[in-house]
Length: 154
Image 1 (spheres, rainbow, N blue to C red):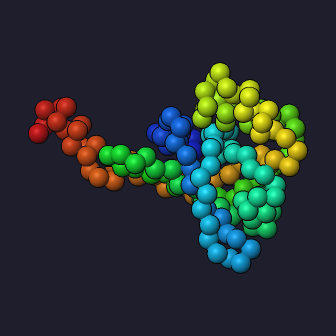
Image 2: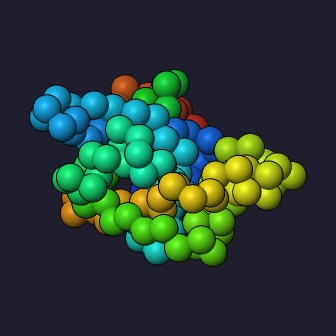
């Protein structure tokens, strides 16, 4: 079974500014999905959210979540991470993770700005600790065709 420590999985998740689609449950039990900015760190998915947002309240009730990342171009692929979310609020750690996330999505020149903006009271650090990772890197079958044509087998 793949894990976040597998180089291909980690590289896929860290490539560019792909967003994660986080699924969680509303208080009524209704499934919800929200896009998130994230980083991969120490075998976990790390993101920030407000304590009083739908995500924050949901994670306080039930830490079970799933996240899917998928680029929208051939050969189409996805990584799904299922697991449990651990929440924390340490100010120094919040600033560090918010700055790292800001660097990934807004660039290093704006990282500090986004770190300060998102490292405020009421914000949470969330670490999605995987219990299962599913990875498919060639949904369309085009990757194999490209490799074969490069190798002269087609």
